[in-house]
Length: 145
Image (tube, rainbow, N blue to C red; front, top):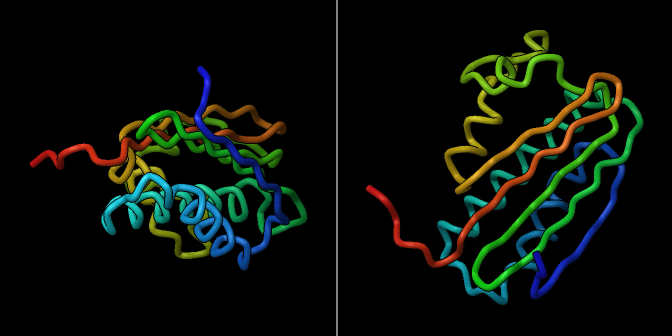
């Protein structure tokens, strides 16, 4: 696919960079003139994906999170990747309320939130190699009731 615009950033897997990732993606999609709901949906989904990389992928240890975004017409494509420990069972990890870190009192809703706010979410992971979360959101699409 050919994109009208693309960007990529890499940042340390530290909590402060969750806000950085939300800000970067917000600035990148401004030209599409998203409504407040669309902007918040995308920022929240990115926040969840980046937080998963930091907390679950790297267990709050050193690492790099990569975020790529592409725009094609009115559709935003976002990929968040890490080279952390990976996910053993993706289907289980995507179950609502499942958390791999019960010691941290995590809610287990990260993937559920991503799926709720984005039009499509795909997760690829390999144990010991990392995880890739790919999300899609069409801007200006009528809300479904």
